[in-house]
Image 1 (cartoon, helix red, strand yellow):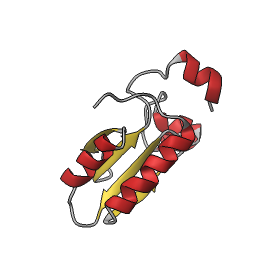
Image 2 (tube, rainbow, N blue to C red):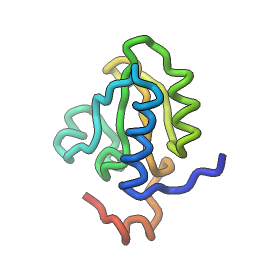
Image 3 (cartoon, rainbow, N blue to C red):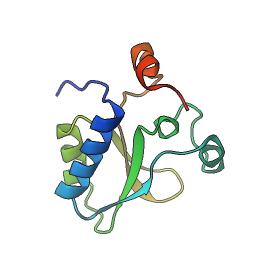
Image 4 (tube, rainbow, N blue to C red):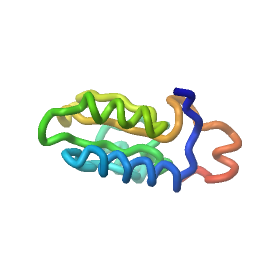
Length: 109
């Protein structure tokens, strides 16, 4: 699938659809302030700071279907444990700095 940067509205819609298709997922983290991001050891360039990343946990441990669904919805994702337990990290922008056109349209925190 060819992914493209999502608008904030598209990202929110994709995350709602992810949870609709995978109801065993629960959101545990979304947009983070600078202070919150620092307190959880987040990267200063985290997409959470832009409101373009969310973390989800599974009460069943079923991440495979959630990962494929996230891909279908155009999300970038990684399932990992950053000290807070296994979770699916999904974002609407590719890893690395957001494109300049995206920042011009939607801004930085």
